[in-house]
Image (cartoon, rainbow, N blue to C red; front, side, top):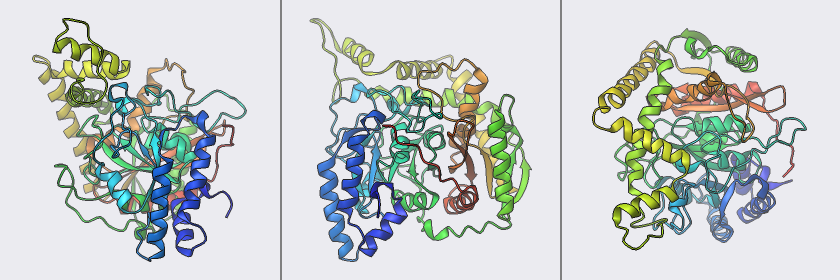
Length: 494
């Protein structure tokens, strides 16, 4: 069957059911690809023994005829998910040596469904970053290159290791998390599919928290069909997470008909911004034409509070981070600084956090502590919460008008070089603004690869859906994917 690690979830599942391949063979192919891909720095904690044991168990389960769709499929797990007995560091030094005694609900759901865990994936420290340059493990590298240029490119962040691993065929799929775009932006940068479901669709229990009201787990896969298969396995109601929705999880794959005739697709005026590169504008136009060709009706819409989303996000997310990260004090687990004679508990906290947290995390914690402090709480945090409510209402008003999904660019550019200083504030602003609003409103959003730039790098489009209607959103993405016909892969250099 050729190189087994290059299969997608759906193809591999069908091959397993047909008896054409075993999970052990699939797993060995992926483990071999991982061993050869050290230059990408995507996998940071390898678990080959666990993987082979799980694969053998999956083969037995498949032969017995009692196997869910994910059974026997080798995947990678982002380092933000706690995995029992396997290092779970969230890309930070402060969690060095932490071996959880429990499994996160999402990774547990996948393992219960028979998925095979190949190892843990690189990420920005505590999921804070858009380029995977804040990780204690070093940078994850994008498998794509600009033509013949050998400059290392970012795979995006914070789920950069997940994106790099899936794009380079080191695993069939991977888990990611999305607080302000951390699934969709890396997916767009690496030419893969990534969906952030509605807030509450996947349990957050056992996932190291960044900003609790924004974080949401989702799959990063090689196709929309694969995303549907994996998302169904990840979702569940979880009494251990008070924000988990007690709703039935549909068969998302069964909803992929590709028929979107009569669907109303909104095109938000506010996403047409000064400084947007021509390539992105052209891609967006092509996306509109593709959906119209599929029978959808395009409607111009307005989301007037979009321009306030980014500043509000950068108040709310650091505020929640400063609260969540207060637990890392060197007392019970993770890194503890060496103390001098006479040091008390305050010195232990200070030295441990100074050594354990990277510069970006420290910066966000300080911003968050500042906006929550007496005298500034109302001026910053409360005001940002009010803006968030207005952003959410913008989307509610649009959906009340019968809009089924909203089409926007996923990112304002293709992947940029690691270490490249971005001096243009408009570019930095645009880099987040397409994705942040979706988290602020708690909506589902998906990035689909739709074209390439002048250097041959992938570009993605984003679809935003109605709350809890991931199936409908995936079907619209399926229709877009079919017409975009994106099949490009990075040339192997690693």
